[in-house]
Length: 161
Image (cartoon, rainbow, N blue to C red; front, side, top):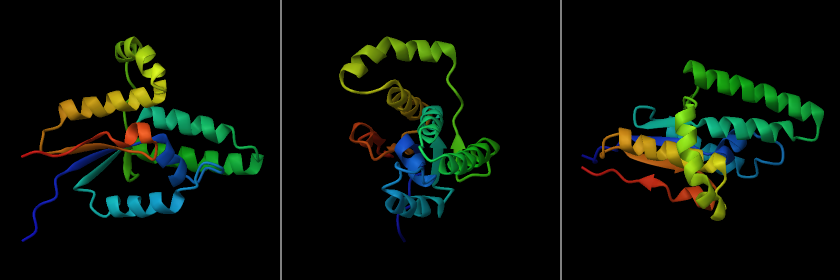
């Protein structure tokens, strides 16, 4: 009998959401992202996908920069549909709650050091949400950031018995 697969919470980075939505000029890894997404959603009892607020905001900003107006509008409509579905619980991923001001204040205290390493505020907020998930979820639960960016790829807490 095969070993049971540990539950896994996956925080989606902006680059993943850009590929899922096929944002023009920002979805060059679409095929690989969709293959992985299809694999993950096959077993929703094991894989729990989360969409951090930073990924939502950053994706919206990238969509607003699409040069072709028709493509910008079509992409914005796909974006709003998917984010609404995430909020309502009908998407394969769930929108994370926005942080409160006290939480943002604590992140700001660390931001200058992260900025010196090239980590922006959006990525820092995703890292902090990953840390919060790690602290909240039991050790037998895997927690990772799904990203194509090297700065975030290594954040993957393996499950322990």
